[in-house]
Length: 84
Image (cartoon, rainbow, N blue to C red; front, top):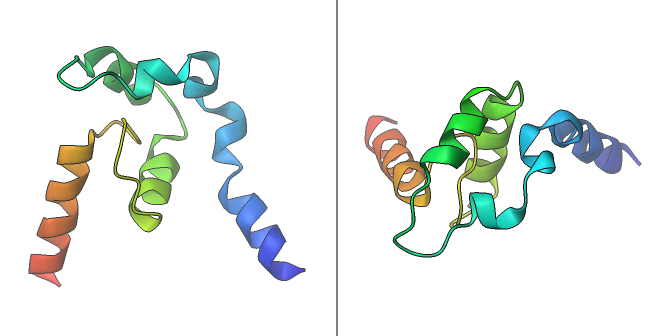
């Protein structure tokens, strides 16, 4: 089962991600709440890039992933579509 191996390898970053030490409400705050603390934690995480790539590849629309909010990820997607 090569597909499962690829999927597991692609998600290895989750094992050491700093977000695993915080509750989901930290990364999925109520609408209008600050995402500053979550972004700071993401900035110190070695899995940040892999996390962001995962969120973009899987069209995650809510929460902070890879240090970016949903609006920031949407802007990034839009910019990538315009450039290529």
